[in-house]
Length: 199
Ligand code: GRF
Image 1 (tube, rainbow, N blue to C red):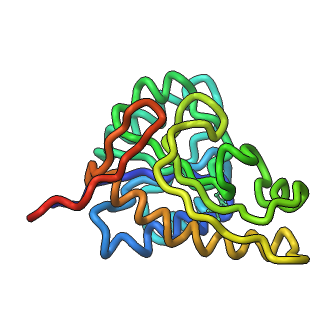
Image 2 (cartoon, protein in one colour; image 1 turned 120 degrees about the vertical axis):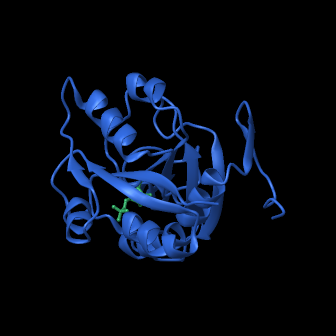
């Protein structure tokens, strides 16, 4: 199968972008486009790597600009990786492929910002990582993959976040692989992962 072009949208550090790019040599996708809504490390890293990296600040034409860039790059799937802006209904209606997001908690617990801090403040013993399809809500779409991470006694938020990131960096390339291979079926909120096709 020819690798499928994907876009990554980011706003911050970009460690998940890096993980997706590093894994792509052994995966059926290629990150052909990076879009950020602000100047950030993720955008600088993508530029330095020679990727098609674009700054699309919020504004009345941001959706159309993003959609145009996706069309030009032949993008079939989108991965949000620390993108701090909600995708508009116009974008979601205009983009035909799947859109994934990664979140550092076991959704539906602790949506929104600083999920790892929320988890520690709440005193949960287990948190984790969720990769889900994006809908118009906040971290609310159907769940594709989850992995649990036990919270350690006395752990700081930064220590927990570092362990969550390690899981994210392993899980996101797997999720994107499943999605570009079309190895999933959805029925309402239920997402089933299908076995790899026989060659
Ligand atoms: C990750 O923890 C991700 O789950 C959340 O934002 C963070 C982004 O980190 N949505 P990075 O920019 O990929 O390093």
